[in-house]
Length: 115
Length: 108
Image 1 (cartoon, each protein chain N blue to C red):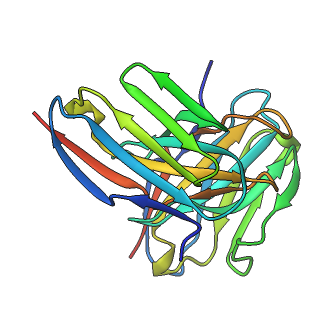
Image 2 (tube, chains in turn orange, yellow):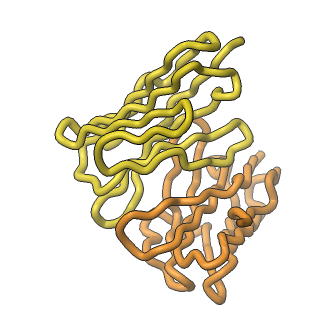
């Protein structure tokens, strides 16, 4: 079974530039998450999708971050314009099932450095 | 105070040692996950617990719901076990709350 795919693995940009990350979840997984993990901290939820609908985006800085999941499969996370404090690893995760006991599968992450 | 606390933050060990990582939480949960993160950044799920104890190879995870505490044990540690171990709790709204992780280094 293929895992969660993310790209690019690494990205270096200057502040005020834009960047986009892509995620392809495990086939059949209805729920998809984007997390931001700053160095030395645990992952912080940015947005959760159920199929192509948003379940939770309460911690997404909507003035600069946007995410979409067209057709309920792949997802993109965009940052525009980037700030220095956006330097982090952006993790995509997916799971099957809608509630109860479930296991979460993570991608390798996309490491962003903003200069 | 964080809702999920891990200890220690950093841990070094010699190969072969028995290792324990602790996780305490202050919220009501439906399950607790132990995750492993290697330097490249990817995260692998090790265990999901809602009660009792689980074992997989040299890894053992326990949870005490009454005390709101879980432990991850590694027997006969090996340098390849070097990673960050993260505890995450699933609260009743289905949301995950993550600890800040324990960085483990095992030296040969």
